[in-house]
Length: 127
Image (cartoon, rainbow, N blue to C red; front, side, top):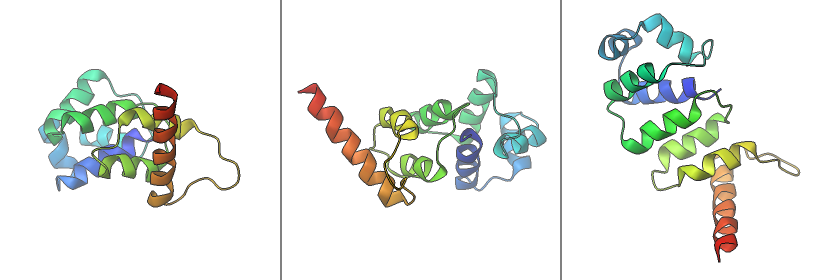
């Protein structure tokens, strides 16, 4: 799962402890910890909204967090979509589900190359 990974990254970006984040979001810090450790995987829409408000996420980051609920996505790939604000979120799901001949991408640069290839392929299909 990847929701917990992204949630922890966004919380740490704001320099919030679990307890501080729990107070701001009005969600029990122990539950947040279980989400981040992926012991729990299906937060309600109300909880997600509380997290988005407490973290003051941009609309793009809020959408990314929602896309990751219940999904298994490589953490390095998640990092690429967190860092590359201009990268279309529509590429995340196909990249996460893609099969690779040979070696699966491991580094951020590897994933960026695959995302760029996929983007070009999709653009060619539209023409």
